Amino acid sequence: MRRVTLTQFLIEQQRAGRISPDLRLLIEVVARAVKAISVNVSKGALAGVLGEAGTDNVQGEAQKKLDVIANEILLQANEWGGHLAAMASEEVETVHQIPFDYPKGGFLLLFDPLDGSSNIDVNISVGTIFSVLRNPAGGSEPTEANFLQPGSEQVAAGYAVYGPSTQLVLTVGNGVHGFTLDREMGSFVYTQPFMTIPVDTQEFAINASNARFWEQPVKRYVDEMQAGKGGPLGKDYNMRWVASMVADVHRILTRGGIFMYPMDEKCRAKGGKLRLMYEANPMAMLVEQAGGAASTGRERIMDLKPTELHQRVPVILGSKNEVERVVSYHLEA
Ligand code: AHG
Ligand code: MN
Ligand code: MN
Ligand code: MN
Image (cartoon, rainbow, N blue to C red; front, side, top):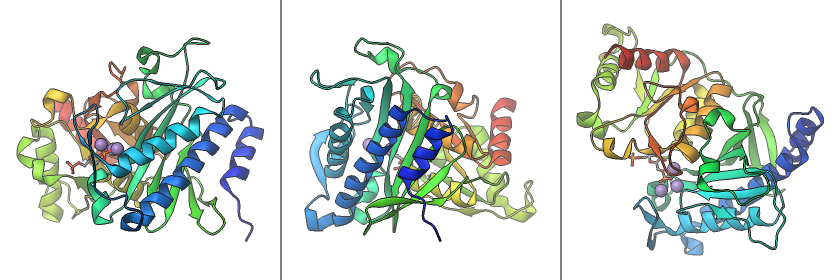
């Protein structure tokens, strides 16, 4: 069978007029960075990359060594290509400007360099999430305000999952496409065209240790799922929680399901647990492009007008009928 690589896929997208040469370069560079991160992740203890970095990020989280390494790889890979106006990262407090000696382009790149940090040391799947926006600032140095665009403005979004295999999942607004890293060849091979999320599901993902902090609509929904066949939903549900958003969303893009990190009393003061700009928005775009839905419980995630680079939001995403059910419970309440 003829193998289509990411490079060929992107050139064909460009020829079809769906992406510009600069956006193609941007995605190629992100894919190259992801390969380097994959090498570091997979070496684990052999490369001394496990454990704490000994520093905290702007959100007060203790950084793992791999959080720092992945962030450095992405920043360095994307600085010199001329496709970017600036970058933003979970691990960087404010806008990362392109060094003055490199040319600048028209895009803003945002990323969660290493998602699922708590899983690094236990050899469970982790990932990278990225989002691409246009720079509305023209020629001048982008400010934080220039990044604060709703998710509906994203021109591309994707993630890499470092699991038993490394996969890259991507949308440029024309469906969701999956690629698997061929480690010997060093290239991403197009393996999952047009990934779709079934509208119904019998699988849910939530950190159940927070149950006592949940709001009533989420309590009601989880109780109803756990009541199984004899309950109001009339079917049995299975539960999975990897605690790497990338891995949980990848499962949903592969076989359906609903993922929730809802508002709760523990995270209310911060607005939620997951970050809007580089976790919720890119995942929302992928999920919607695959036929699913993504909401805070009260609003479509991609309609939110961001107020801060590191803003947090509640996230409920996945199979459409289930997400709509939870949203209706929130609106009734
Ligand atoms: P990160 O490692 O990038 O900080 O993100 C971790 C997030 C997300 O991946 C996951 O869904 C969630 O935190 C897990 O939270 P719990 O530890 O509460 O399960
Ligand atoms: Mn983190
Ligand atoms: Mn994350
Ligand atoms: Mn992270």
